[in-house]
Every structure is written in C-alpha cells, then in structure tokens.
Length: 72
Image 1 (spheres, rainbow, N blue to C red):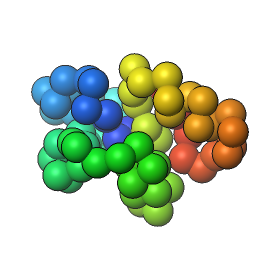
Image 2 (tube, rainbow, N blue to C red; image 1 turned 45 degrees about the horizontal axis):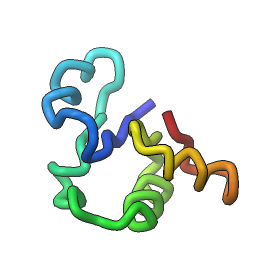
Image 3 (cartoon, rainbow, N blue to C red; image 1 turned 180 degrees about the horizontal axis):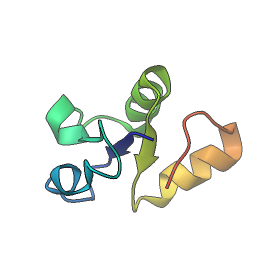
Image 4 (spheres, one colour; image 1 turned 90 degrees about the horizontal axis):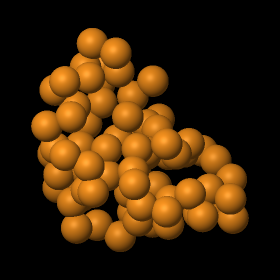
C-alpha cells in the first residue's frame, strides 16, 4: 500500500515509513501542498494511493462518493 500524506501531516513521515509503505509520498513533494482536496483525491485515485490525513473532509468525501481512493 502506498500512502499519500496530506499537508496536515509532517513531510518527514514518508522517509520514516518507507520500509512499511514503500512508495509513499507527501503532497508537498508533488507540489500539491496547496491543492484543493478534490485535486488530491483525483491524483490519489489515478495513481493508486491511499490518502492519509487528519482532515475530516476526506472522510466525509469518502462517505459521500465512496472509493477509490481509500482514506486513513
């Protein structure tokens, strides 16, 4: 599973979890740090990532629209 970490999580996390979640990346590294949630969702869906976030908007979006992508 590859995680896409949202802006509200530290951009240092991916380097620390690569052994457990290879290929994980932070939105900042993709220059999506200021992107709208919809843009992030579409990118994650297209590229096969699971979104990790503290933002409840992603959870509400998953209830309304289902998945993919999945959210943590």
